[in-house]
Length: 332
Image (cartoon, rainbow, N blue to C red):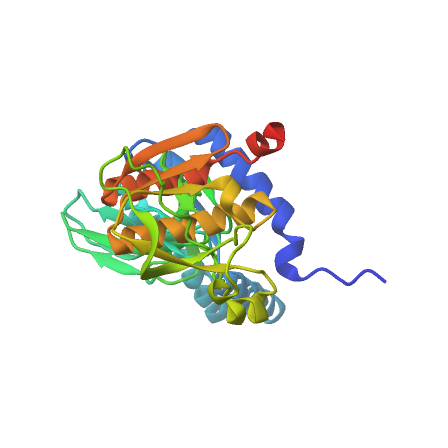
């Protein structure tokens, strides 16, 4: 038996049609968007629908009993509702909006952006809210010539370069009987890094054992730096038995002498699926940056030269975020 659709699911096709129609009609937006009256839409709220039903009932009662006071009250309420439509639309039209922030985050973390709303006119604007099409931020009031920033939290489900979702600016001022809204489509590209691996058994790839390169670290016994796949003839004392008991993956303890440049390599990881390897490489990049160790990144078809610093850190994470896993499939 097919379960019945919820009310929100029943209206989704209509909502998608309206958004596509508005996108074709308006096109893409620039850095600053001005809401001219032609792109401001208005519909009654639930309170407005109830108000209409009450008005219709009052009008039927007045007609049935020929009650002049009933007619006067019904028409007075209708006039108030019609005037509120004008004020609601005027409260939103003419505002200027811009989007800023949207710094990169890891998949699964909310991305924080800010919508700056500016009121260029002398008349105050009331109860202005904004956010993704399915959400609303707390409403703010704007004095004449004033501005305010509305904080947004955009959900991130997967890695990669994503388009900024459509944003909805709305108001229900003055009576809450009608809601005026406008859709904006910022031309901003968001980047979401892969979610770092949460397993503690992610191995740290060893530094190159190339003595021709000054500053390179060599394998030794001075400092424990992480776990790595065991090599043939590995001493049983080097095996990480506790990690093997937790994860079932046989790894060896890695010790280093000195602090050199490490290569984070795709083929040196225990994960088999591409997304798992990207998560492990992300964790390794985070650890290397936290320790201040220079590192390079090698993926099938891509190589990032060794370096250190925040710029190199974000560059490597951006490479992991946009990496096409089909390159690995072709390499095989």
